[in-house]
Length: 315
Image (cartoon, rainbow, N blue to C red; front, side, top):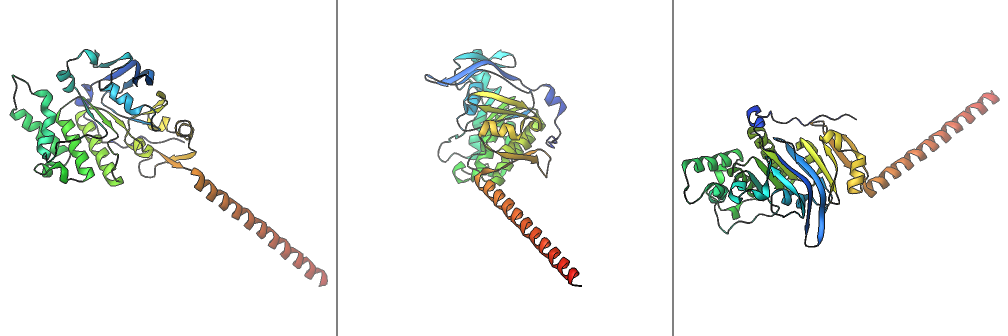
């Protein structure tokens, strides 16, 4: 079955031409003596949205932490715009690459404006204090994420969806060329999940930033990804456009789940319909009822033919 590419917002050609590149070669990552990712090669397409999917504990978040220099590799190298990120000064790296972890924390009572303003920290220093350019960056981040009206409120007062948009605004205020998001839709209801992904997608289109997102929902991943990476046991098992990657065989291989993959009725991208045990039982029961009705129908037809034959003989 052929699938359509997601109908994404038109990208800014000028921004796309200067998009940042992030790639790893022979990357091995782990915690203590336990290796999670070993000898992995990966490259995020510049100026595109890459979404990483896979079962729990397959190495998705570990990979993202390694790409963000939050986890030192046991082997291999990560290059940002051709430079080894472990040789780039921390403040300089923070001006080029931003990451939003799974569970970010903020000081109690901090206002939205102050929290977003912290995204400008990499641009401050002994000889460069807060300027009008920082005000502009914060205002733009608040505007783009639809949080300007929340600027004076405490982060503690906000809903889950509002808080997540504020965290994204803080990351955007860094004005980096690469943005890594680790499960940004966790704990959000469906409406807020779509809201957050819409914001990220629109930002990618406008600014041409290179984005990588760890996500659990396969159908949302198919809708929002330009490039999809599927992982299992610390390795990449498939990558490419969602329409090429997301198949029933891949879902079985990566998640151990039987499914049917059909075209999304709204945008035409792949949509995974899980089967599961209950659905299989219901399907079997429906097939059994159909079979029984066919048998009964055949018997009734046969009886009618016998009656008709008998009446014809008596006549």
